[in-house]
Amino acid sequence: MGQPSHAGARLGDGKSAIAAMARKIGEIEDMTGPDCTFSVGVIHAGQWVNCVSSFCDAQA
Image (cartoon, rainbow, N blue to C red; front, top):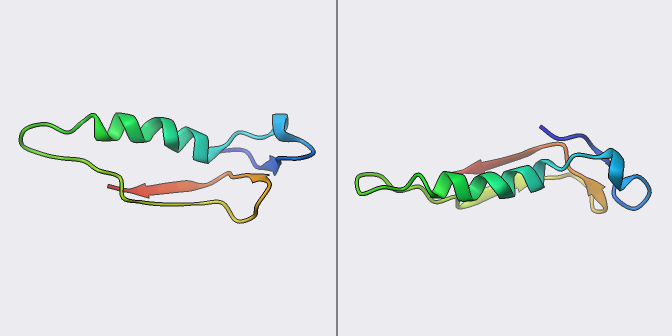
């Protein structure tokens, strides 16, 4: 879960859920093994441009 903020005026106050998900996608896909594969194919996040998103989900 992130902390929303205006990316232009108060970027440092935010915590991006999108950036956190981007870091996790590699971990998720690295769980692929000989018997099971993981591939993130759909991501939903954000509501406005120029704002740090507090929400992101992904489907694998």
